[in-house]
Image (cartoon, rainbow, N blue to C red; front, side, top):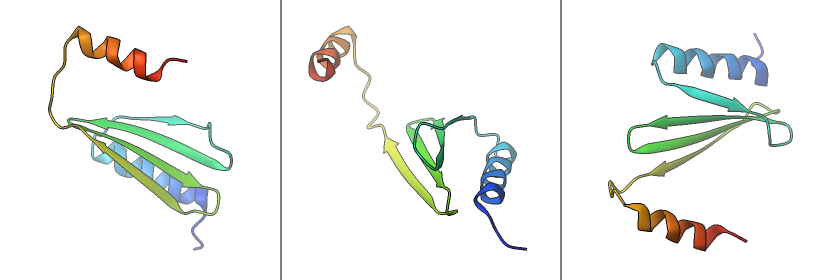
Length: 80
């Protein structure tokens, strides 16, 4: 059986469900389906492209917890 992007997507979703890992699907990238996953201390972004290839990006927390001042700093840094 030939593997297609659709087959790969369903296999990935099945694997996430079996592992009981919550995910969200979005389609804001052309010719790709993106899956966002949040697990303790990490966030994963998985893009499944139309050709069946995968791109995985992992963002890790350093464990720091910040207060209200950090929120103000973030808005100053990233607001237009």
